[in-house]
Amino acid sequence: MIRGIVTVDCEPVIRLRVRGPTGLVADVDVVVDTGFTGALVLPATVVTALGLPWQSGGTAVLADGTTCQTDYYEVEL
Image 1 (cartoon, rainbow, N blue to C red):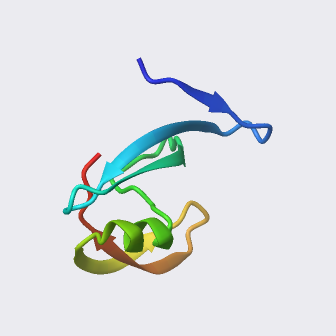
Image 2 (cartoon, rainbow, N blue to C red):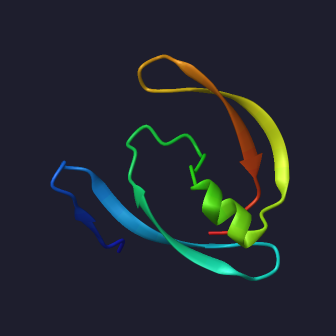
């Protein structure tokens, strides 16, 4: 069972523990996206703190149809 909360803005939020390649961990609160396609967005501060290795760059299409450039990093959940 996954436990979480629903915010005052009606967003479902769960806490995930992510681990970098050196074993450092961070607990991150994430909004559950019903259109999940396999990518997780993390704050840049978490990427830096965990020393996540860069994998590739790309373009993401947002819910409103706009696009943005992204970087992809490897992390363990």
